[in-house]
Image 1 (tube, rainbow, N blue to C red):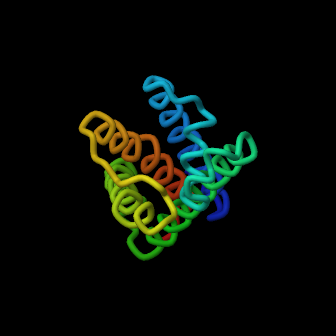
Image 2: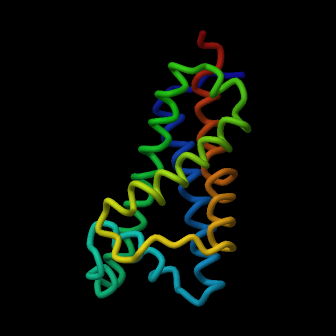
Amino acid sequence: MKQRSGLWAVAVGGSIAGALDILFAVSFAAYRGTPPSGLLQTVASGVLDKKAFAGGSPVAALGLLLHFVMSFVWASLFLMASRQFRMLVERPLLSGILFGIVVFLTMRLVVLPLSAFPFPMSFKPLATALDLLSHMFLFGVPIAWASRQARAGVP
């Protein structure tokens, strides 16, 4: 297995995870009648509060940017953790799933409540289950896989 750089792991893992996660979110929102711009404005509402919903396309673009910035932050945190705990990259499927659970819970129970997000946190069964699965398999696993590539052959 060819070793990649840490920057590669963050860029590729964060990009794939961010793209798959937002694709899931946009698809599920569309199923529930919310257009992509509305979903992305919801993401931006974490910094802009309810004003995000009056901002049109520029705010939707900000929401997409913020989503990917968070993906890169999470990918960086996983890579740093893998330098302390090699087992994270030795079993990327398991560690990616567990990491996805940690990300899901941290976002729902810490980040969103501390942000300007204007809605109370809810845990509707279907939406919660699908969001959790998305974070486990579409977010956590790509980040763990990319980190494994960067850590290949490193003791």
